[in-house]
Length: 257
Image 1 (spheres, rainbow, N blue to C red):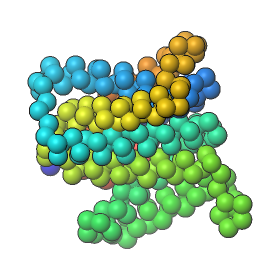
Image 2 (image 1 turned 180 degrees about the vertical axis):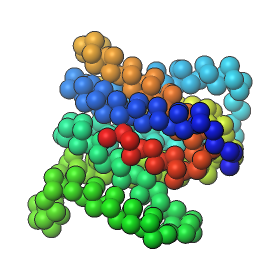
Image 3 (image 1 turned 90 degrees about the vertical axis):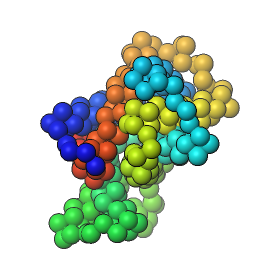
């Protein structure tokens, strides 16, 4: 793992800023278009920019079948599943409440490190995990924990939990692939694979080209999601994982709400 620099931490701060904006932009966009269509166009813009940057900086990538499978796993978890959960959640819950659940992600990563990779679970870390889980449950149940035993969670709440689980899987996969790919190349490959999945879903749904009838604020929101919330933020987050580790990089997600 490389030595961290102040620039790395600055980029992670900007990642939190951009991802905070995605909850607002996503909420605006889902009022006018299908979540699948929005996500497809989001990653279309992102893949175009990332592809151009990859060609300029690293040249044309030569990926093996095994490489494509790794990139497809990133596309499945961090692009397809995350965005399906993220945008569908925003059709049912307000952006501010939804953003609070992302604070659960660092705790999930710490828990996965302990259970799957044997990372030592200190008392302070365990306390943080318990507090984060408690906070997440309070948010998704609106403070009524009895809902877990009674009426249960609603559609939006399950989608919010899905965003946390899928992004945790993406973060852990990105860490394991960091030796094979540069942050930029890995982000481009994951976005490209995820875009293909989302586009297929939007075509099957018949919503892909319905975005031509949406307003300029919604179009601007999708552009923000693609360029700042994805192209820059995903690349810098992957760089942060490579430079300071997944747990420290994910800790910046707590700033998103």
